[in-house]
Length: 155
Image: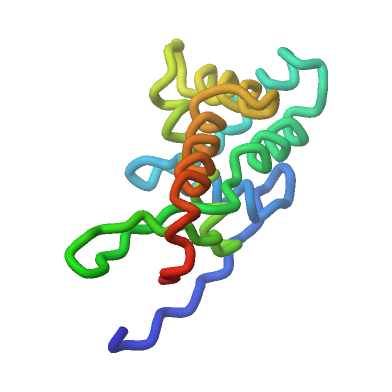
């Protein structure tokens, strides 16, 4: 890299749970800078999760995020004309980023009336170890396991 990386801008915690992780999730959920709408969707989804499971929606969401968080991933590296998938550990910041993106992406792909419904269903599924986002994590781990032989190449 030629230039210095920009400083990370500190996030403001969200109004309801006073948690920076919620703000990060809502920022990824947001489209066209409409943060208030994204916040409403997120809070509605947590209310629906709480209704479905009779537990705290926030805690279920936290559990879902940890269930979806990957430990290893594969990265492509070209060595001697061949491209190898080399397994590597995921940085802490990227772990969170991937889990948030996967939860949102697979909730958008679900069937349902509103985004809040779809997000609630994906959160409940991920907390139980099911759903698209959890399957994505499992597939990522499986790929890394299958390519373990190339781990000595290191990136």
